[in-house]
Length: 173
Image (cartoon, rainbow, N blue to C red):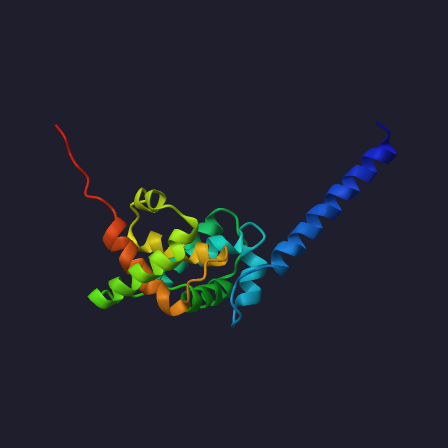
């Protein structure tokens, strides 16, 4: 292969990577607000927005995550760390459960109307997730097109956890 052809191939690869990076940033699902541009610039070079959106951490948890990323090589100033922690905590904090019998019944109705349209009951039953993991699964399904309204998500998470939550560990000796 000639040097000229090698250069052309290299230029095409660089152009494609640049286009993908711009495309990924343009498709970012991070919500608008103070700090979103900083989050895009500092975080989306290595991570998909889905990874950030799926995490539901209190501010202290976000501070730990940002510190971990800086130990792994992310270049973030102390001032930027504070802004990122504020942004993430404002948009991706833990969801407070409101578990009532009515909420669980509402969740069952959503489950039967929405989840079973695409998934078999057995697929869902086998998951046995903790409540925060069910919340992440619901968010992921919504991003993929599930017609679950914002005011139905908590009820659905309550139902899924009550019906298909983590099983107690059986210790055998």
